[in-house]
Length: 280
Image 1 (cartoon, one colour):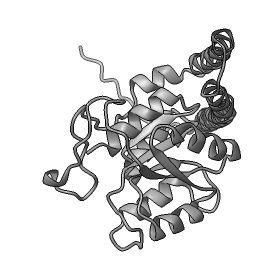
Image 2 (tube, one colour):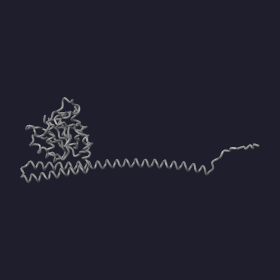
Image 3 (spheres, rainbow, N blue to C red):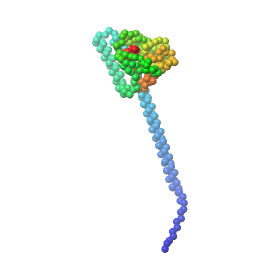
Image 4 (cartoon, rainbow, N blue to C red):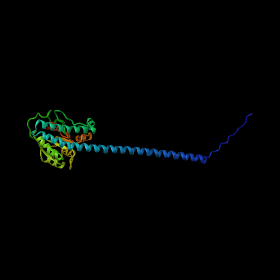
């Protein structure tokens, strides 16, 4: 015999306890989401702060590097001027030791600031031993020819411009180069340099990158601008800089500079650059 069993389904209403659990779960999820967002913002803020600190540290190191190199430029230059005066072999040796000590200090500075590592990755100027690189906007057929090695040219009288705001450098460089056939006019700031380039014909410009009124990058950009009033838009421009960081060299190239010399200047290096860019 079969027994019929019937089932009756009734809706179950959520009790107060069940409802409270759901609310608690929703609040917990909301708190977790807020905590996650706060953590994300914190990490973003920490990353931004770290990046800002790195920029500040790099700016500080760049400024220190520039200042030390600029002042050592005067020290090394004065020593080399002294070596051009009548000295006994012993006195000359003393001066050479002092110069080498100064250059060693710069090497240690470079190592400390890791600028040597930056230099291995830096953009380079296109320097051929016998033919110069074409200037911006000039066809290859108009490239300047330069001598492959310094010190082999005939006696010369070459007029160049030194744009430099450091008084020591303006005093030292013309005297150093006088005996090598270079007449050096000096300009103490950017506007003075630009005015000289509008009035006079020069074979080359030694351009300090950081000057008042107008910096070396701005002046070089104007030199390369065909609409400017300078006499030679294709004049060779050698950057003089207390910075040897990647961004500085890239900025020199972007401005249209042809070459770069890091301070402190050493006479042999300076003569090599001048001979290369002024010997046709």
